Length: 193
Image 1: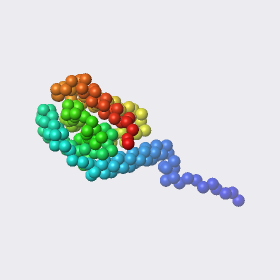
Image 2: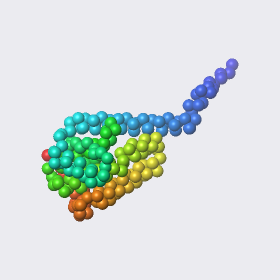
Image 3: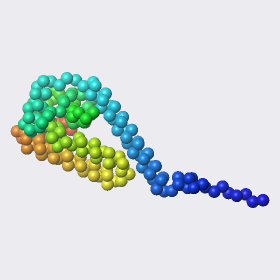
């Protein structure tokens, strides 16, 4: 009497192939990144719901700079507690310049002009929309180091382009612009009380 070893059925063999395994690993990584993105989006929503009123002087300055840059519209401006650095967000397809609360009393009008010009340059260049597309591509090809390198290089080029555009469109000196950016970076390293 011989015993036959159970042979794998054809459907089991499909699950054992390397392409299927690699596809499942890739899909799992993509889903993990999407879940992180979802959690960050929820945190952003919470921050925006707790945002403070923007001082009228700052709002007027943003609109004046947007007109000077010949923009067809002006993003919404919010002051947010707990935000590290100024940024432009496309939350719910609405462009919003988010300003950290801790910088509100530290910067003068000319320094705010530097920061707002930089964020308006991101708006003018439509960087937010490019970032959404690039993020989708990055999440699909998260396993490829070239995708991460390209993402980092794209972001660095965006920042350099926005610096150049802001400096070209505003009367502030390069020195003031650099000092303002340095002040923002240094504020990240200050201990919170």
